[in-house]
Image 1 (cartoon, rainbow, N blue to C red):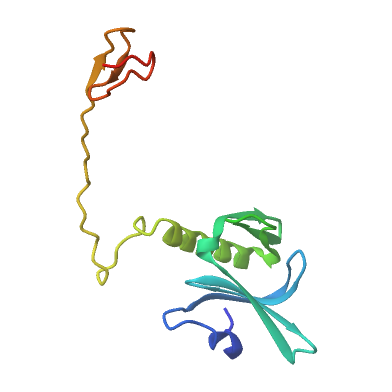
Image 2: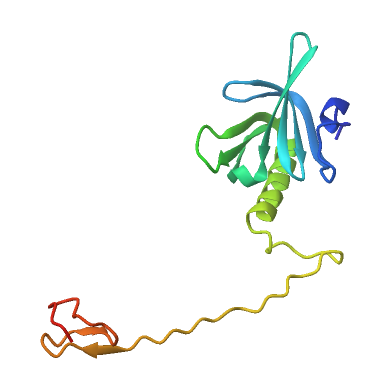
Length: 166
């Protein structure tokens, strides 16, 4: 893995770290992408233009991704991230198989962490949540209507079926 560019590292949050940096031409349905960075919080696409003098960044939070798919080829693979709110999937095409497998694993791991936060293993520095299951018991008593003989709530003043006053 090569070193992530400093212009992207400056965009990272205080607890965000780069997990994988892929510097290569990858084609999104509408955007040429120079590089892809996978962090522990999001996927960042870096788009250079104007001979590299300008750069645009697009990022996708793992919370906005519903699923990830790996389409493995002989030498190159495609990673597709299905977005939670619809639209075209984020497609990382023409990745070397090794990079695609690493990217798929990192995205999959972070999806689990963002979508079901209590399902990943607890570390020694993170205390396990202490909550007892809450059981709610409610008793519903039914009585028969003296006119139509159907069941209704015991404190009903009128039968919901025949309309008779009780």
